[in-house]
Image 1 (cartoon, rainbow, N blue to C red):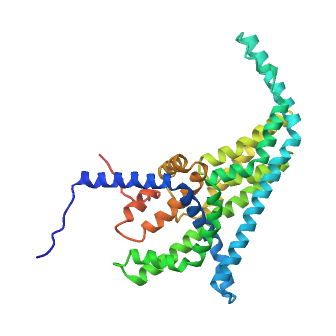
Image 2 (cartoon, helix red, strand yellow; image 1 turned 30 degrees about the vertical axis):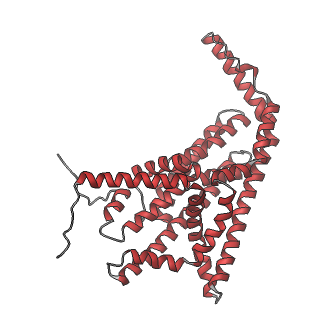
Image 3 (tube, helix red, strand yellow; image 1 turned 60 degrees about the vertical axis):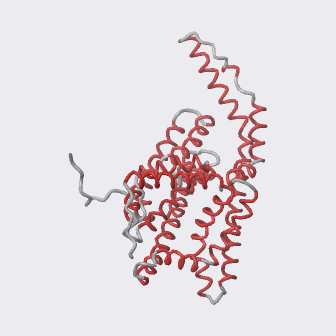
Length: 359
């Protein structure tokens, strides 16, 4: 007696998918302390894989090459954090001038509102500069606590290098696992697709960091040309925020614009910052990203926007950073099978050859 295939009604399938999404979001929320370093380790390990492969070609064992790649990555990350901490701490030297300029603007605004609208706001009394200095100095000294809070906890920081080590050590084993998921298909074809997938993901993530490095140089040159202090910090900061689509470039331009407005005489400098960043952003979106990152893992605007909202609501700032590479990886995995291809189409850009649906 054979088994008869049971076909579920469409509404039950939709209900099952909805429940699955709810369960996944619930697991992502309660498992933040483990999943955040796990996802972050996956991205970092992809960046370190080429270096580890290069060491293995030099007849170095897998475990030693993994250790050397991990140590190199740790030094790079610590160097970046040290740079950011020192740059933020240097802001305190300019707080007196910034506070005086801000008080001048507040007084002018207060007088304008009083003369035109007969409204007394009290902002003309200015701000407490000593409090501002103490606040920023405190924030600078506690930057490590902020970074720790972004990752989740101290255990997350400890788990991060552990996960990176195992991802690098067992990267071939993980590839075999993905191949086993598609065991019903042509085995050789699946292995080839997985190798191509790993290369595409590597090129994608490395390409993003290449674009960020170029943007950091362009931003810094533009700010140096305008005579804005702390140009290196503002340039690198804006480039790092560029990893957040749509919102990142806007946030990256706000800080140097406000700083230029408060430290320079005249509107030429803040307007110059806005114009320079806009030109750089046009270069990035129309030339740098298409040429360096490519279009192999393009996500459509709706999937990107929805992903940012979900990532921010579940994991905060780190969720907004991790969600885009994660969706890009999922899109490429979905493309491995015809059964999951519709999900890849849902995440990707609409193709020009797609038929238009008319009434």
